[in-house]
Length: 401
Image 1 (cartoon, rainbow, N blue to C red):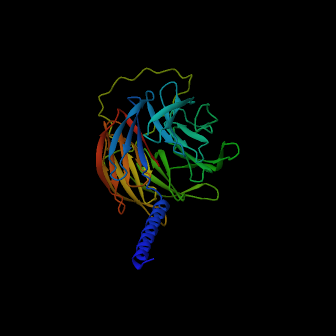
Image 2: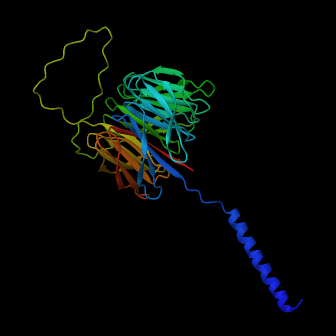
Image 3: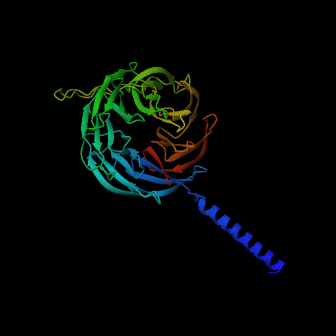
């Protein structure tokens, strides 16, 4: 073969090799998969759940519609596998509704309904997804309902436990072994061990911890590293920091910080009195007095922690404010950074799975606020406000592949 022919063959061989190499690289490189983030907000007054998509780069929301759930639909939680949303309806008949989440568009489709033993202001999912935990403020009880292998809740209560006054929240730690519940009116935190074989809650030792009288423990969050537990107190406006003993699942109080700055002008909140016995005669209402209106009182609502555990946030309804805290990586102690004004009477907050955005709902606002989280300081910058249904209170964020 002439030299020119040899050179041509070599060039063709080199081009083929290069093309083959590029093809192999393209095949070996995994395709870029864009996650989809959906936001669900229960609008209690409207009786609907509003659905939004979230732009994962900017935090901007786009409405996707709503589903009718029932008057006073309030607390919600998402299954650990992110396939179902569970919503509690606090009007008669008390019930929990299971919705399937459409992974393509975030749409909700009702799949099951189960009766609840009382009006429940809080719901959370057990770590493995086998149970849902509930608390009843007015009924002074906590309860669990079984979740089927298909993710549906169809049966009634598996367990009901009477508690002190005004049970308000119930969550498990990150291992799923230990469960904690708050009693606002009794100023107590209950401690349980979850029996892995029976699925029943059993009292830990000690079975309860007392908080300071009048604090009113409300909502609970567990730090991502499972070393700290933070409890927001509704009546005193504080966050109590506990250390969690991994060996036995018990809590030990470390410190407490105020969520409001000094000089807020609010009086401590007051827990409702216990109801009278069923056989006590009803007394006629006292005539209205000309006394001055009661002073505004502390009315803390919700608490959240970023997925990396570096920042904690809490809301207060009387001042319509949102407070920011940094977390010590060594001790878990909180340091207050500041407070910003937010939606009127803020009830629910949620932080997205990336830890970059925080969403706030206001019970007396017709808007949601989305904030970007400064990754160095935890400071919040408003991304936008978006129309939402009346009585918006609970927020859930789901990120799907």
